[in-house]
Length: 288
Image (tube, rainbow, N blue to C red; front, side, top):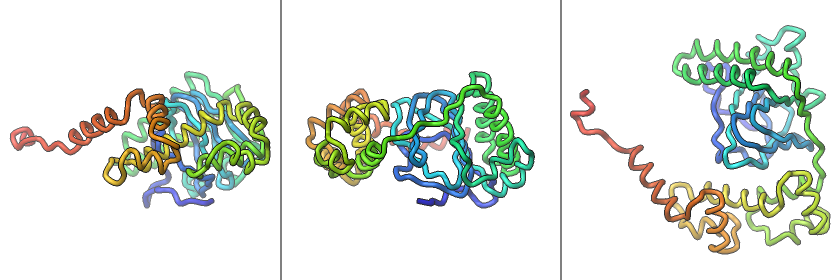
């Protein structure tokens, strides 16, 4: 599915740190060249029918005709995301070394592990660009420079990470779990994927690095957070059931595993944050 990215008019791209709870859930592609650099944690991309394992300092390039989706990540997962407009890529990538970045789909997945110095250099540069988002000229100049620097560091990195083929049944099961809140159990999932429940469980763990149950619970939890939002639309119980949890006790157990506290404490913390965000200082403070 092709999507339109929120690149503002006049900008040659976009730099930001991905919100771990705000990932596109469907396989998607876009006209912009994308570069990711993992800052913390681990995750898994599905790029077409291949799996790419992500860890700290993994750098990966995603091209216009590469459907991709982030299907799993650790709780501390965080990554830089940079979108480069095609006009910038065409203008900047004119050398033999950079010409591959002009393609719409390379022959292989471009993923490597940077060493610590390389990752720090790219991350520091992206931080500086993000800090200058208010100055369009600096922002666009930084994007152009970062494109060449990030590719240079990638080209000189020694560790390749080209991805592994994902078993078709595992791919079908992962997408179904992620997209369908009403699944009734492993038997239904296995029937859809085309394997027996026991074989699907074994192959899924081998391919994805986590059990079906762990992956399923993570997807339910993230779906709950999206549905619940600030608590103004649905109750906790209704959001949990709509997210695919079979009961409140099941939801409560998974919630504590992921957040470290119960839903009530989470609501109190969120209320405190909202009150700080909307706090207006008195006039004498503002006058200072």
